[in-house]
Image (cartoon, rainbow, N blue to C red):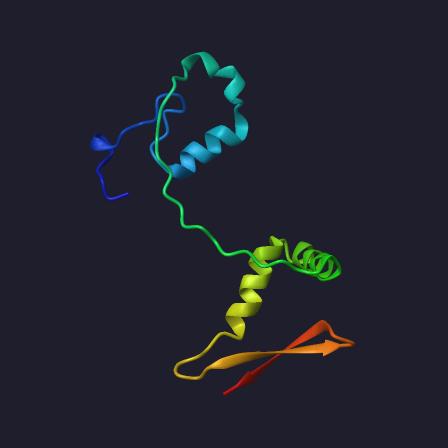
Length: 112
């Protein structure tokens, strides 16, 4: 935060000044203990809709297993893997779906 301590607004329950302090407070406290100090609020959430991809359950299980070994969420691991093979400075990468008996079973990556 670039604001001086004198102008920083503290949160009403935790008396915290930073997001880190708020997180530390709520990691060790229960909202149930402070429920009478809360009040109803209204707010709007503007979130970008994220595209979804359906995976074969067996493939997802293998991704989930690997992600757990790395202490990652499965979607984070897939994003990391895809980012590694993403187009680099002017080079395009394209996908070729390989089938076996008409059933998709492998994606091959190649440079154009």
